[in-house]
Image (spheres, rainbow, N blue to C red):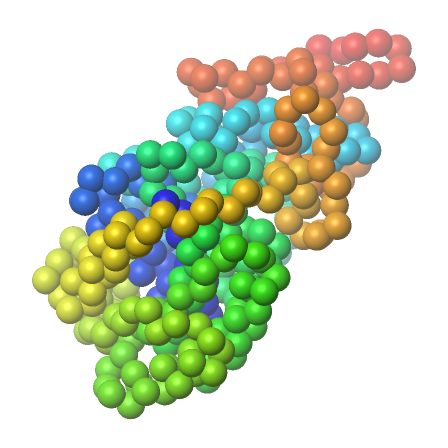
Length: 314
């Protein structure tokens, strides 16, 4: 099962996706939670410490005239780099972006996107928390997810983001958009959100009530499922997790090729016997990925060899 959460920044999608990840794990699911948000917050809702490092960068090399290419499989990336959190949830984050994207961040983005698109979900429940707004969703960061939950709070900014996301089902065939009303404090809130979703032809699928206990947990960076397990909001999210598992298994979307540049819809896949993800980067000497091997024990690639006019240097 794959599910992606999208919505306006501050709508609560990270809190919802993190709590639902924990709820799925407590129901016996093997869960992989992916934080694609470049302003990460999913870690706090799950109960793990976010990292400022970019360990995934060890899984990609830069090839001149081709761009970045992965040298580890999505499963290897999960096995060696995903943090094991409470209830057994495996957590992997894209990382916090800086004002200027570094080579380390570029390499990490390539490996992370390869996991999002190519990780085999058989036996797993994969939960993806996307960054605010529609950009990542339209560039394929939902991966092979069939179910995309649009988190909407009772505000015009949130409605505007939902309008931009409503066209996603037309652009990405096979995606099912479902509306989740969040922070509903009154019948008026419910009516406003329901009317907007009906206008956008997005089903009003679930509702999470406004809850002071949940808001308090968010303020202190604590997982709501631990500090407020009996709150109305947490109970509603546990019910959503059950409903996700009870949904008839839809025909799985074939993940988009991992060889596409996430910032360019027209990029071509990198040729070769192995599926790789390419991303343009700064000029660099040509490296030979075939000579690079990922060390399972240490999680670091062996020294790279550089091809020069005079020969191969180690």
